[in-house]
Length: 440
Image 1 (cartoon, one colour):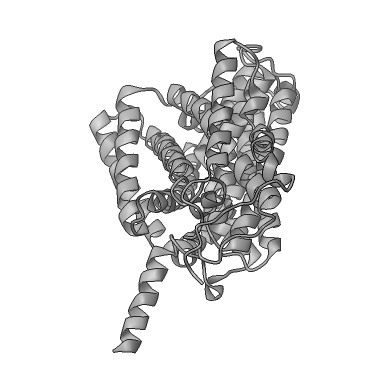
Image 2: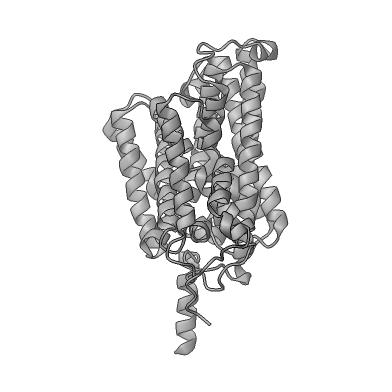
């Protein structure tokens, strides 16, 4: 009887994928699976859409510079967040307890839930756009069907679902990207025409604003690093996963979007692929792209919501899937994809970047990598973290009202500086971190 109870408990933990506890040693996996699964987090259609935005507002070399700077920035954030996840064996949601407290972590966890619902909706709308001018009610049915399908692999968790599908899908997507980069310039006058491209809206977006949009596009992917690296067997998985995933997902897909935007003049994925004669391949690749991304985003969304509601991951996954269906359907019926995408990345570029800056400073500088043995033993609220976040948002809003260039104030680096100032007493030995330790 006792043995059966133990087995049942083990199955429950595995299905819930340790959403509210540390990952045990037996579940750890190697660097290659960590890298492929993590790439699945960030290789999404929005990367191509962002490339379209860059191609429409910047010269070729300006766009490439923004991609390089953006991918380096989010890769570094991913390294820090991924190392925290690997060392503490917890995902993003539980790691926010370090910077914001046991109850206070509901704020950044809900931000991740909100962010992922937005990204998942954009990805689904990108996929059904391939169906052309069919009635909206048919697109809504397709959105619901695809969302249910993607949730099925997410439901199985990291080792039993996400990494197995990523082993197949990610290599295929890399091959598709290579094919596009080879074919597209032939339809756009060759590489000389591509590199000398003069965008139709040159100067409408500043370089600073472009960088902030780049952060808004991928910062959530770098923050979620711990959701994957908590299963990493060693630090090699963190480093290779961080840079490898964003080289493919950020730099790679963004580059594909720039090439397609320049060579076809389109700002939509389906027409752009059709214009170079590989519309059928595009649908297959976008389906794989959306599948790998949505299964992992739905997974992370459920982990974040579990930390907010203190419910099982499976229960929270059901809520997440319904929210995604509703938002994606609303985007399809009420708004154009391009307008929705630009609005979303602009908003996320404001509310999300402060979170990792605060957590990184709190973990490495304030706590010196020391945390309670029990993940539930953090103080209810880390007021320093909450104050730092509020300051970052307030500064941005004031600068926006004053019409001052504010891209630096939207970066994790600014949030890190703010949190150092707010935590100066502890950093200079005039105070201590107090946890709510209830276990021996």
